[in-house]
Length: 237
Image 1: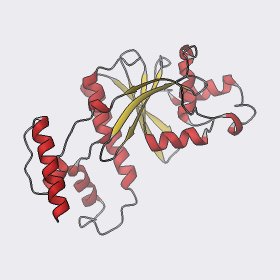
Image 2: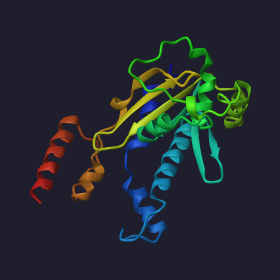
Image 3: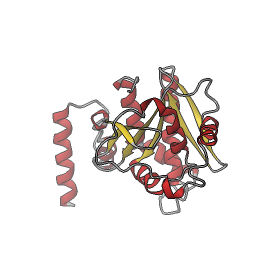
Image 4: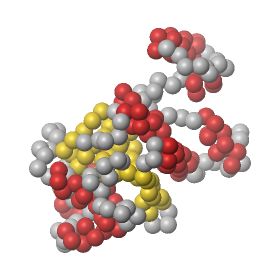
């Protein structure tokens, strides 16, 4: 279902979930809030800009395609184009759940799923909540031709329509997770893959905040040992 190898997928997933202390510092300088005592109204936008721009660099590094999704004048998203002309779009798990609950027929994810017509024969994943379009569609989701026209507008920069659309959803917490999902044209999940194992165990941000140098790559045993030490130190403060 996914043509990207784990090396590329790993870079994408880690770009979505890992912190970059240097970019955070640069952001605070840019908004004249080096002390951190001021306001940060653009904080969430800055985080998404960092993720999207990192994905652009990954695309250029591996000679993959990418383009922007224009959402009015307020927001731009980036999608990645894989070797088989499939596209990858990115959401936090929280935002994806919100889209599922609201189920607006004009959301770009609902429109993009129309390109997954060849997957309609797959059995939907059990125990899922589909993108409920029922009561929110005007005139029974208008008509399929109109929706398909809107879908083509979303990816107008592509020479050919995408072969399929894949969602990468992530949850950024102490124990971050990531997964790939594919919907059919009825907005039912027909395929998933857990990508959490591709997330690096990177404690550099925590270690550096405790004045511990962590410039070299560490073994799993060393990382687990330092993690336990950090927890003990923080509990003793």
